[in-house]
Length: 547
Image (cartoon, rainbow, N blue to C red; front, side, top):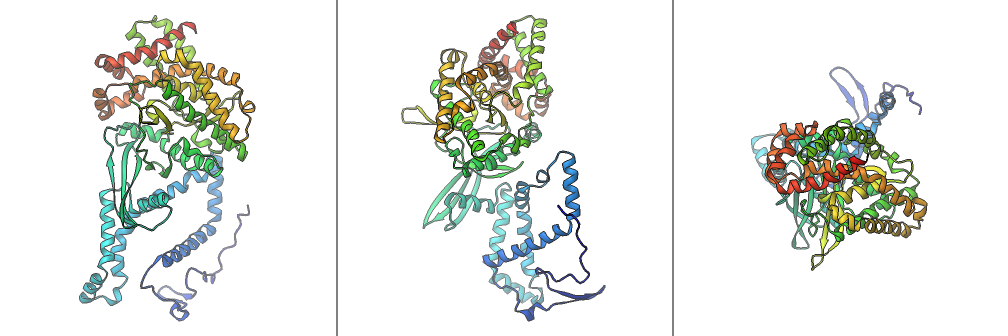
């Protein structure tokens, strides 16, 4: 790219977005008289006027970037040197976020500006008459300012976007919008709320509903989410990877909900799955629930392969910034293993020194489980498919008939066996796996194969059934240990959970590897906690005997 650019000539001021300047001094500027060139001030600023102004602003901004070519090229080169991309510093998501943040500011300055712009006519009588004759317009601005002050997370502009995305037209009247709590929902790593937008459509009132995920208010959760780039991961997955699939003719919304808007580290807005629900975290899945979850998971993994084959790309390379491992670093691994040690003390199962020796062997293997495979095909992996991250709809007899997969904050790019084995262990009892594990794995493979066949892709060339089963066997130790790490935290009783969420010191202790308080207190308080801790830790301790 040629970065050399001649300086602007002294008289090179005749640009199409400003009047021509003939000469200038310290106190005077002589410029083109636009009133003599059929230009005038607009009385009614309609849609066409607005688009023309935005077009002119864009030209002005573009020229500014052109004049700074040297600076931006040097910035690009320096960022490249440090392994960074310019778009990661200021991308389109940041742009949309800043537009939202400046929404209130623009409305506040619009109100006095409307009056100041008519200053040449200024008098008390004129001002009074001007405000009176334009009261409808001013009241509209004041109403929108009040909306922003009442609910700063959702703006009128966001409501307009959501309505259009839903209806695909603008023939309606916006009545109001409200953001409310969802009863009996306590989200982790995000606030979960219900947005309702009331509109008038064809002389009838209609309410549109959306699911909104916001940054958590609790400092501990908030800091964890920012550290792991959870919002960024989910925004990129839904608005770029899934969009890429949809544009390639892949029916991705068969298995994940539609995402209408994503602002990094601010909010995500999805379709509201009114007739779907997650299972109680203390109720492990039966065969029908697991099988249905595997059917959706198989489609998700197949869609990952299909889009790569159709576009000749590697999702892991194209979106490498969101697939960096953050959870199973040295601190994360040590924290989980300390929990296993403490549970062994509670159960009085193995000799302490013997267990520590065996756990040290497992620690060495653990990082490899979350690295891209050189043996098996890697796919877009959910990475966190446990009881709360699958939602089911049911028939009149209570039988599950469809499953959506939600919450992609932990997404990875790994062999499909990673999701398969982890989700199987995180959602089922030991007894169910003993009875049905082989059948469920074969069912998953069949669903995966059938989906690829719809797009004329031979599954045997991706992974044969024997290799798939072998990969599942290799991943099982990781899945067993991960279940213990999860359940040490996620199975805490509700009485303790309320205390934990409000106690920043407890959260920091847990996140820094000290799980004693969480496990010890819940072990004392909850029979259900004791049941699940024993069920998931005994297999791990038995495995350690054989290491």
